Image (tube, rainbow, N blue to C red; front, side, top):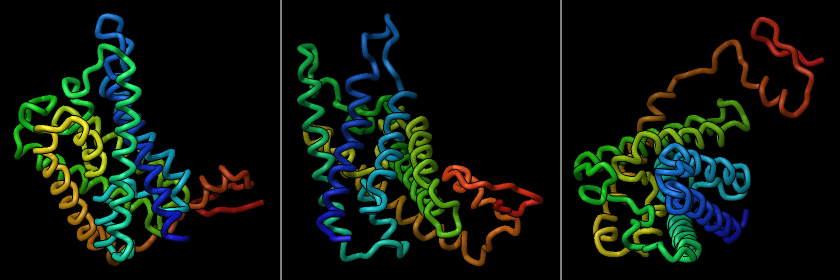
Length: 266
């Protein structure tokens, strides 16, 4: 696939991630306040981020691989799954998509006369006083590193050639949802330098000052996973009773019957 088309896919995909994920936090998390209880809260925001990745993985995965995340691109490069020559262009496209998404979100949110971009935090990430739970820098760094490591570990495993075909987006999207459920109170959840950069540039001040952590920690976590996953899978062989073809076959309408772990078509 032509590089320019892949970069366009990454730009639009990251735009969707920021607009959908950060948009759910800015526009819907506390909608109508605690009295009416119409906001989607942490759980809704977590699902929104997972759904943006899941939907885009099916939409552009066959075009660009649907990285949407500089840490993912770095991790895949270290793991030998992505050409190093395309790394910088991918990261640039992802950051531009995130900034564009944050801009459109700011335009929408500003339509509410009570909205104050800087005071709201604009779904930016942070530690200390900028952490939702006031978690200190060391806790934030460890959290972002570990969460990103597991995110990339799931990506590498779900996209392994021995994994069930067609289900990687579901596993990856649910993994990102779980990560948000765990870490929103700590850092507002990044695991994605581009996602952090977009909102931070509009908030300015401390959001930009703390942005370094949300580049360094996720990339470190991704590199760790890229090193560890090959060690875990080395020498592993597929199980004897293979179920990997059953669910895809059911989805595409094929007639399949499973007898003692073997697949029979009829």
